[in-house]
Length: 263
Length: 232
Image (cartoon, rainbow over all chains, first blue to last red; front, top):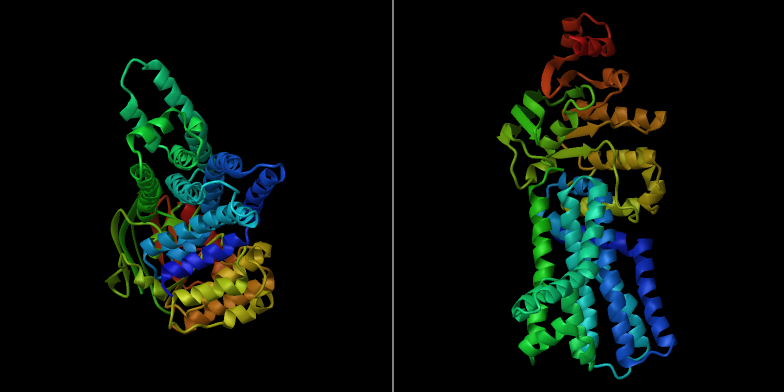
């Protein structure tokens, strides 16, 4: 077995037994069960799960990921004193963090959906985008967490940066975009707004899932623009490509920091 | 076995090592001593490749260490504050290290002597600091490496375990291996060390045998000899 797979296996074994990650999976499952229990069906459940996903997944991936990297510092040093190339150690560590996070999300959201027969009349594509979007957010924000933790040895600063990133992507960003729209209402903003949407993975997942539902009223301004600009298959394809970039770019930043830094 | 040639290392504006040259010889135990912040841990990390030198060279058996890190197969390292993934069992940690070096012969003497087989199934997170230190030391000795680098190896160990570790260090010396111990516990070093490397403010203030140090300072024991170096 390669060094990458051995490091990955150790990470997965460690985190699948981690009580906080288990609690995260159970919390997502409890939310989904509660939505079904209180009479939600189809689109309602998917939309409520989407809102929970967009808030919780980045928060858990950023906070848990940052704390995990700091707590693993000595283990990382142990691995780096073995005759292994740094890129393989990084890949194993990154996947060993991202895969359990994504797995906890899939188990927490997916199992209740399977038990209740998907979500009634909700389109399969919306469920697929919800599941895939949650996985992509787990991976992207786990990568961002690694990049943050590898960028500073000051744990307090690292945690503050992680929380700040969550606040920015999930809360501040949409407000800032709306403020921009209000301030420059006279200007043609379509392209800028599409760019702004693609620059935030949380927005991309929201637009993909809502766009696949029969709920155009919930798309919002950017979502409606997105549908108008990229109708048919082009919209989802561009959204998925942007999500892929959002997984790759923070990962490449974290990798660069890992390969260059002193431990 | 290990030679450091004019090593320089800075973190930002702070110079941690400034032109350190040192030879660690086979069949000898070298004590790396110095006040806090003198650059001991940085020196160890540079040899291990955890940090990179700004200038100078690290040679292993006469050859510069490679960036790929293959040379580390010949080094065993026990850090000052060992930590392993909390939810892995002791046996899983050892099995992982074995799997990372396929085909390498292993020596489980220290694992047995420390009684780690009794804790084989225990998650590392449930172990005390002393048991983690035992696991860390046992891992450093696991592959019978040519070079052992031990950072405060007896910190947190009970007297019996400390004696076991010291006996293992003596065996390693008799087998012709190179041992570097970084520690503040000078009486312990006096029991084990053949050579002393004294670092102060990033510079090597003394490098030579314990006998030469005692002669140089006129002291009878290592502790007053180090104190004399510090006062100089």
